[in-house]
Image (cartoon, rainbow, N blue to C red; front, side):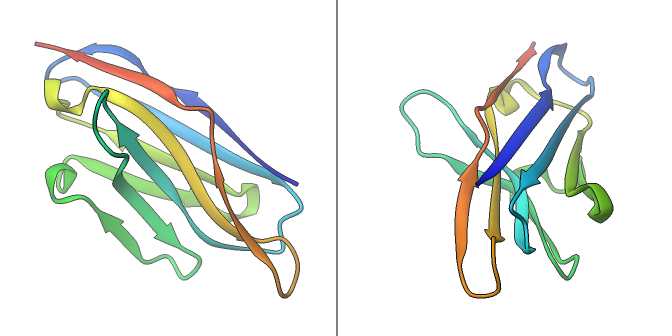
Length: 120
């Protein structure tokens, strides 16, 4: 079993910064990807940023230049540093990971979600 524990989020004024952290624990053989998605009411969950086991990062166009995803491989933790936040960034942010839990089998896992609210 794999668990994703999120921390961070909250309320900030436009132009401010927030930091989200996600720690993976449990039966982890190898992490394929780990990162963040977000969702607003009535919309589909969308990719914000992910990083592969080989440290290749992907960002949504809307956050490029403002958000930075970093990883602590030893702790199986990723941190999303969000700067110059905009009201449009308001959403529930979910940690996501695709993880091999043994040599042959992998699964996709989600955190419980954390609210980010940016006031104008």
